[in-house]
Image 1: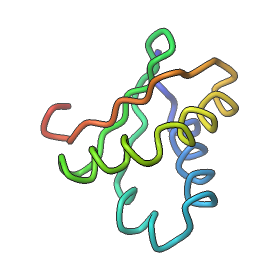
Image 2: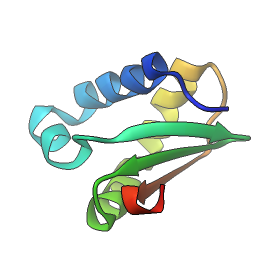
Image 3: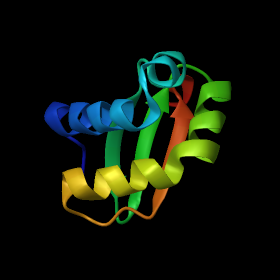
Image 4: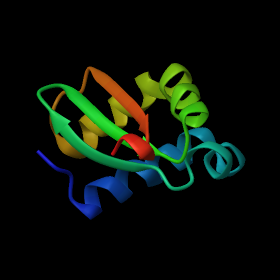
Length: 85
């Protein structure tokens, strides 16, 4: 299921509250939470380095927030660079 713009922005806003403005502006700027398939959430960011850092450090937080916003259980968060979109 592709996420609506509202769902995408809701997840972004809640993540901004969790990580703070500086981290959000450095890592999450331009992130797009794209689709949920089964219990996997797919997101895209500018480059591979940011994708790896977000996935490694913030996947549990993103999964919890996405589960609340989408009202659907999210287990895995895959963050990929936009070139793979």
